[in-house]
Length: 278
Image 1 (tube, rainbow, N blue to C red):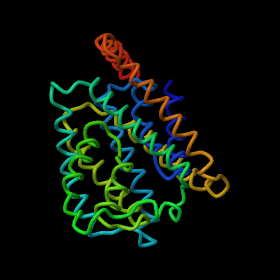
Image 2 (spheres, one colour):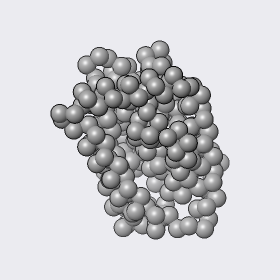
Image 3 (tube, rainbow, N blue to C red):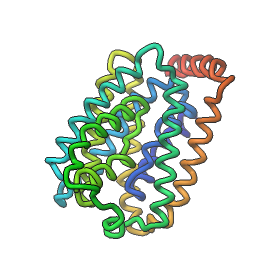
């Protein structure tokens, strides 16, 4: 299963390189259900993965000038506070792993629906430009509020939240879509770092697995970026969106009422065996 997990790590990176986003959301279910990592620990590991691949993705955008530093600072400051707070909240005893996984699945459902919708509307940045327009002149004042909410979601369940950040930057921050995409990657990286700091000392991380998984996902991102020259992302986005729907449904099924206690026991036993094997 460990070899399969590493192969899937590369697949996550390839999907990111091909589609420009969305693939990192698969890291958590792979770590939990394939690698046998306990959910809270897997979320902390996911933040490392999400942060790393977001940094890689932000580099070409920065070179092209597609990052709005002012709005990134305003929105990013709020999201990092939210991410750290969400991570600290997640480590409290009354926040169960089941709750986190269910919340994660709901976030994945939202991302999947948006991905399917955008596949019908066109996926290129030029096509997306007229689709989102600012709501009002002073709506940017709401950016910190939404930033805290998005950051909380990142800290709680490990998702980057790009599906919420990009529309917020465009609709509330009056940021052009190209700059919103680049800025969102930098914001996600900052969120992931803040969330990860919030988990430090609260979960036992397998650093070897974390680094290896992150490296393979990063390698896959580079490979996916190369393959994107030959594969039209528009043809893949819809199918990948439906795949995310299926994964989200699987996570919800695995955490349905009545089996949560038994699932927790099995997961803990499996995690202990995995750590011993290491």
